[in-house]
Length: 316
Image (cartoon, rainbow, N blue to C red):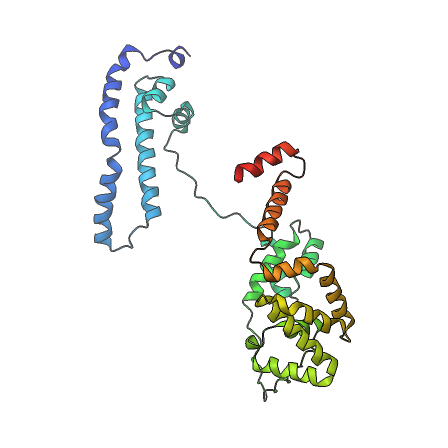
């Protein structure tokens, strides 16, 4: 026990020197083995070249073997396990495992784990060939036989098997059926109202023909279409002098909706007259109101007037 916990004895100093001298060529030994003898043996024997993974495993084994031989040599010279671990920069568990092994501990090859379905594969294959391709049904059957896995595991297996099945035979197609004529959609009131106020120069030939058919069906619709076109042209060309004659004709129209629209204009006559005659508009005012509402919503409506005023004036 005194040897394990204490410092290396004086007789172990030559071993330390030989250790430090032998650690430098340790890293190059695997390179020599990889570049030298194995390559010559492959050329002579004509065997397949090693893969990158095999070469890495060979280099790793050579390094572990060299480290094992150094540990055993220093242990035989009387060094403690603590001293060996300190000078080789390995853990004490590695040193202890190497000393207790007696021989070089080879790594066990990693094998593939056995699936829970492996004992039931013959039964599943037999049932599959009998025509049972339902994964849930097969899972219930093997669960009755002692299977403790999930049904999704059986479903994944049957899915792989189902993908390998041949596809259905191609059907011989007969004569192609002619597609039915598209059904004409009924004209909606919203669409008709937009056609009535749309500029005639922007209408297509089909739209002009549709308006003509609509106007020929009823004289009131013809009058309504003409009044709508006159109002649009009056607003676009800003002809304020045509407002009074148009209101008089609209009040005499047979359309109740158009008479209500004219009454609303009559109540705001001064504003509508100014909009048609003056070059200014209230677009800037509406924009500032929209910005003010946006700032209030950003603060979730909880800000006082002083904070709201500061934010409005800051952006101004």
